[in-house]
Image (cartoon, rainbow over the protein chains, first blue to last red):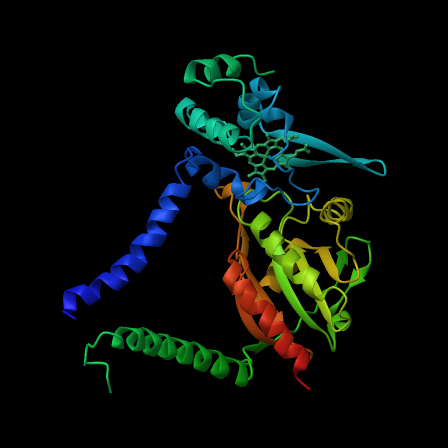
Length: 135
Length: 204
């Protein structure tokens, strides 16, 4: 057998899995960049959360009927109150006030594509509109 | 050997041969690392007492004769702590029922992280206070303690959350000797830590 026929073996071995991977990834899951940089440390790469400390995003109302409140939640953060005895303390999510509209759009599209309940079509205009309604 | 004689069925032998070489290398690699004892890097000597999430005084006596892992964090940390804590939880789940083993997490933001805050934090993580102590105390003493564990911690207004600190875990044996440092943000490093804890448990 000639050496170049022998070479086909390893080439096939590499190509087959590569093809399988590519065909599996056809589905558009959006750009994870902003999420992985700012959110994944608490909410997890897969949006799974961490027990009762950081909520999972996979089943959040903010990715369903409350999606219009999500840009404000992200830009102002969350101050959840915890009351222990006669004291009140904050467990909170930091505010991400410095995200640009483009980043916000890319982030929320990513959240919606992965863990959303569908419905709302997003755009930068819509997001800046929602941001104007922040309390 | 047939390797250079490219007959029809010799390619099967080449692949089989390569597989053997790789497997041998892997098994050799494993053997070596688990036979040598872990190095002794330093000795722990903490002259302070801290307060844990159950409002109990925690001093060095508690850790005598115990294997334990120590780290430094703060509850409002926006960046690496959540990852450290999810990795620490893996260790906790593995060894929580072993009475020779403990976890010790120090808050480097003790003014905010009071006993109540630590208690709530522990409840949200659903961890038992007897196997995982979260402690608060005098700030300077905690920073000095970090230094004694070979880890860095300091205040910095420009850092996210206001503090800079090491994301590493320190492994301490029954004699109070430091036996290893592990990046608390990396799953593979923590896999190694879990193995090393097992090795310390097997030490006489």
